[in-house]
Amino acid sequence: MEGTLIGVGVGPGDPQHLTLGALAVLRQADRVVAPSTAVDAVGRAESIVRQVAPELAVERLVYEMAPGRQARQASAEHAATTLVGWLDAGEHIAFVTLGDPNVYSTFSPVAAAVHRLRPAAEIRTVPGIMALQDLAARTGTVLLDDTESLTIVTALDGPGAVREALADPARAVVVYKGGRHVPALAKLLADAGRLEGAVLGELLGLPGERLGAVSQLSACPATYLATVIVPPAGRRPHDPGPSS
Image 1 (cartoon, rainbow, N blue to C red):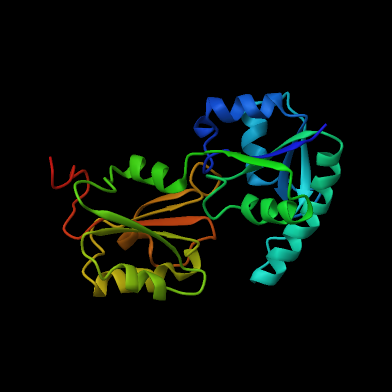
Image 2: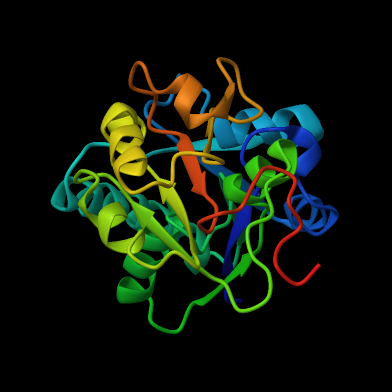
């Protein structure tokens, strides 16, 4: 028998955002695993699953969320060695992750490491609702319409990538992983004339959630799980867009 590794997106935080398709895969899996910083620590993805399906057993896979590409790669390879043992035994494994498993996800480097160890292993994903979708819906922010475009960037290394994306006024910009740079991002948006309408969501659906205009929440840094949406220039809150 050959096992299967399935990355399952559980949404940004609110248990109601775990899809029916994701729940079906979790219930059909031989093993449900969740990344965690320690074996005795409940990770955020695990907490969502436990709220929706408390009958499921969730195993913790230690994954060090350390800064730096090399440290993350080492964590992924360590997790992969555990996963391939279960795959070799023919198990179908559901690996839960916040948001969507194909966008800035813990699952992606783990899946790549598994593929290197077992090139023939079946690896697939189940999409999940992303923080940018939740934030847009809850703030009445229309992301795109007509011929507008969208760029998703991270601010892990500072707001430089955001500055470049803002150059096109018809482009919506979503910033992930930029919580510690929120004050600098707010200044950058103000200098570019793009602060009005920009919104921030921190820990969406989780304890400590903050939600609102960047201009009102930029006095201090936010956590790692912070998302910023900058609509196309000239867009106002609840404005349906140019084609309406």
